[in-house]
Length: 88
Image 1 (tube, rainbow, N blue to C red):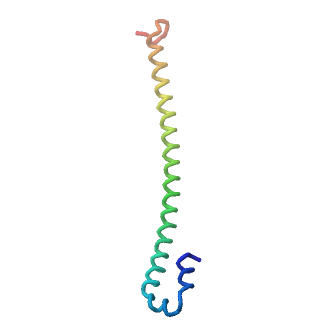
Image 2 (image 1 turned 180 degrees about the vertical axis):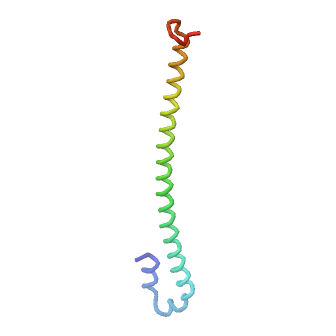
């Protein structure tokens, strides 16, 4: 039970009738806010999952780029070695 519902319970019947429209609007807004909060939480969780996937992909890309860089450096060293078949 929400604080608003607790507050409404403490109103007299006359006060409830007097503020009927405000009470209904407030309860409706509270429901909307609750729904928006749930959706926001789901979206945040999805964004965190996507961020983790992105980070994983970037780590894999970095690993592969380093492997290519290492292979290029190996080839360059071979080209500089006079005993290598590929030396020019």
